[in-house]
Length: 333
Ligand SMILES: NC(=O)c1ccc[n+]([C@@H]2O[C@H](COP(=O)([O-])OP(=O)(O)OC[C@H]3O[C@@H](n4cnc5c(N)ncnc54)[C@H](OP(=O)(O)O)[C@@H]3O)[C@@H](O)[C@H]2O)c1
Image (tube, rainbow, N blue to C red):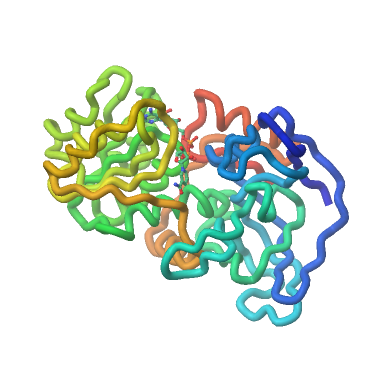
């Protein structure tokens, strides 16, 4: 099989190379998958540049957490999936359901990576995909989709009529926008680009704010729309102060991202609104199943902003990293 690899000590996605490797075999309790599509997350740049939690890669590794494909073999004892099933990987292989379990994670250099023609996963880390989705759409879900689902359905939980604020037009935010609309919420979307805002409007965004031309966007959300009940916070320390300003009374900030720099803000603003700050780290296989069910019931098509062939995976990384990326960037077999 062919696999894309990052070398030990990789310091950027320009180090990606393609390699022929022996076909893997499913052992007892394992599933052999032939991925047909993959997507790139912001996290994959951190892994490639040695800045993810584990630090620089210790050995050559297959990257990416997000892939979807067909089951081509199952090992002894596997009962939940069969040959021919359409599946995706679950980001945390050991977080099956219930409270968070930090364990093996796909594509971090320690767990298996998905960007190969064949991948073996433990049965508990395999999730059947929504019938309504093709492989490229399904590949948008394991990291960005499940994170958005966790943000909107745990903790305070979004209700019809809520106002949900999504920051920027990246993968997590655009899927959160679609999910929040299907839950009956009003969605406020920010972006650095008017052109991307108009694309967010096409996905259902009700209110649009350019955070470059409206640098006090947090106050604008509060004064123009009465505040957000839920914030999908992908910016991190550099945007958190304004997300707190944007919060309606007893709202919740789902703390997800690390896109911006700055000093951590004072938490006092949260006291003034009775607000909650909740950390999110992707989610469980159970959340992935619930998300796929919700997508089937609500005819949601995850937003794909760029498509590249398997041979052009390095170009896909460059596009996802660049200024033209919108929603998810997909690699297709
Ligand atoms: N905690 C978790 O479990 C988890 C899971 C998934 C992702 N994340 C994190 O969430 C963040 C987003 O991930 P992603 O994969 O969705 O990224 P992405 O697809 O690469 O999205 C990048 C987009 O974010 C927007 N952005 C950048 N800086 C911003 C700022 N200062 N204010 C507002 N928007 C800004 C930009 O939108 P415009 O171009 O429209 O301005 C940019 O296009 C990353 O930090 C990632 O590491 C965390």
